[in-house]
Image (tube, rainbow, N blue to C red; front, side, top):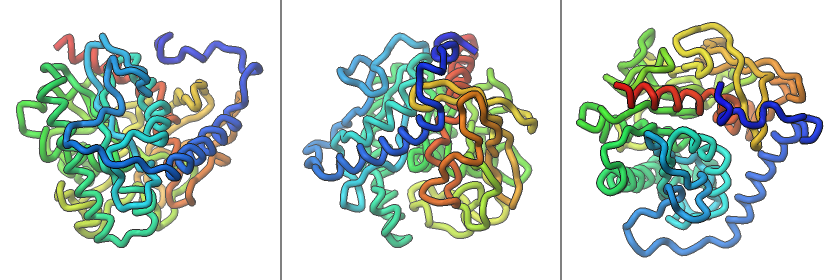
Length: 360
């Protein structure tokens, strides 16, 4: 534990809302800001140049704008756009700013955070599009994200190590980016690690790699570089039709650009960020709405045939894990809180992995 990461841990919790109140505030604020952003859709950026949501030194940067860390983080945000089209435009909206502040800003303690705006598949498309329509939208989103990555490499990376951070659609984008643009290229040597949450990273059954990636394995120690941390959080056994923890049964459901694997030869990767390389339960360092909590425990589980991070515990102002909201329904588990539930552990891991990378 570092003082920077868990800066709120020693505060008197009586001065602040309970964690349950903060969970509700976080979810409601996310929805309210997103709805507010949907009423005034900005016009598309009239150029192919990258629009940076987060960039070190940028004014009003929701990721903190900090620079001077030994490595960079390249963050790809989840599905947040409520624009009424299949794909969002390149305008920076309140939805993107809110989620970047919640998910990515804490990592600025240990890395310089870069995050491109990309024309993601919108929430409207997620809930109303057919499979083919959704796949087409995801392909366009990926093409945009790859251009942002190429711009970052060509003009901003300067040979620095980089941590990839993604959640949900952001994880899907990064799974494809690693396959197409990083693995088995000289850039792979710069990969500090990849934190790919809520997006069903696949490995060969019983293996640490061999699914999405042939040479980027699961992280098993905190000082390991060039590896992946991945999980989806659930507070109960996932239902048979859960969206996470189970490999897709057919091709093309996640877009065609990455040619991602599917079928019974694969399983979804779960790495517990509080206990890498171990199957034992471990206490998580959660951070929700800027407040630290130590009441939850996580363990990778295969109950019900889904490979997920099972969350239990509570107390000390934190609601019981079973009371945490499964939104929009039980098939999603604790998807909206995937990052928050282990944020302190993830930020600490980036610091440890960065030191290992610089010391190589």
